[in-house]
Length: 99
Image 1 (tube, rainbow, N blue to C red):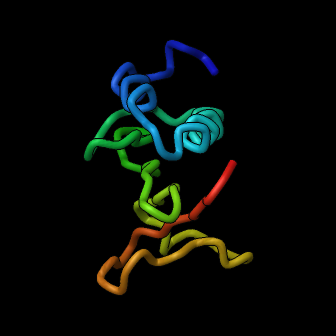
Image 2 (image 1 turned 180 degrees about the horizontal axis):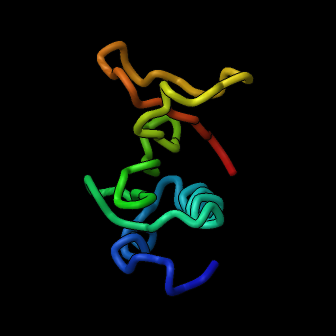
């Protein structure tokens, strides 16, 4: 991981994380390999391309997830993308329970 591409606010977020810390760090490395820009929005690591939000890393009680802001537009041949609630229109998650 190239340190210059990381965001200090995300470093701080990861440093304070108790639950999902190892999963967050693994997901962060995967997303940074996609050459997205790391930002910190809505209290979570957020990754952008040309100033457009692409994916957010966040955690819940039962799982952590990559949230794709326009995930409904992605092809999902393996059925990995989950609509978080019926009120969520475009976003989709890929959920993880361990590294």
